[in-house]
Image (cartoon, rainbow, N blue to C red; front, side, top):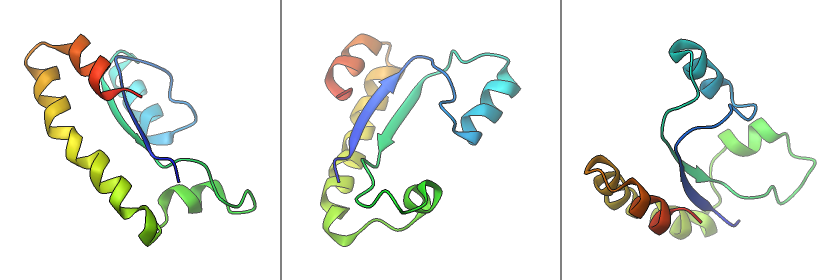
Amino acid sequence: MRPAESIRRKGSAGGHNGLKSIIQCLSSDAFVRFKLGVGERRDPRIDLADFVLGKFPAEDRAAIDALIATLPDALTLWLSGKEDEALNRFSK
């Protein structure tokens, strides 16, 4: 797994039903997103929804924990008006 993180100021739903719903309710795609990606499926035969919504393999837990640990700093920067610094430091 190659988890990734990014911060985006706006964007499309990208096929994500939850984001589609938020965009519809707001009538806008201009809202900040703090994203944690799960990486590529190891086996393309696995259903994408099952892969994304399933349990993480034990060997990926450390990488996931490391990503989650960066969120308080990213949110603090963003909420204190330092959006560009947050984007530069936490988007990969």
